[in-house]
Image (cartoon, rainbow, N blue to C red):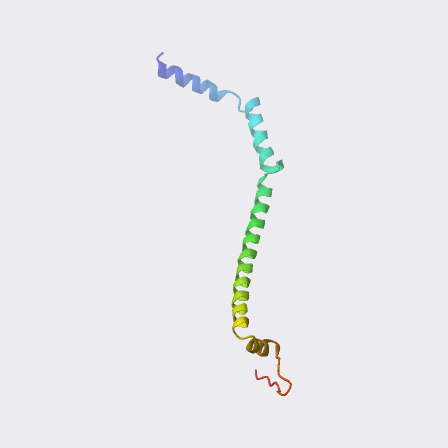
Length: 101
């Protein structure tokens, strides 16, 4: 027998052995444990990813609100009387307010 035949025979003998030896069982149990029961399981990672996505959406909303507030602040600083009249319907004692929609 040459070397090639010996290697093929060894591979066939190894592959014909039982798949369920203690090492394969230990590895399988370890993978199952990590997948479902561990602190960092797939379910936990999925929930954490969803929470991060929701927080990022809220962050974008808050940034938009901040931009609107800054624009409104500039409007107030430029002409506070006009802003008060338009937004809160302030008027002087001798004036009447008429709303046209």
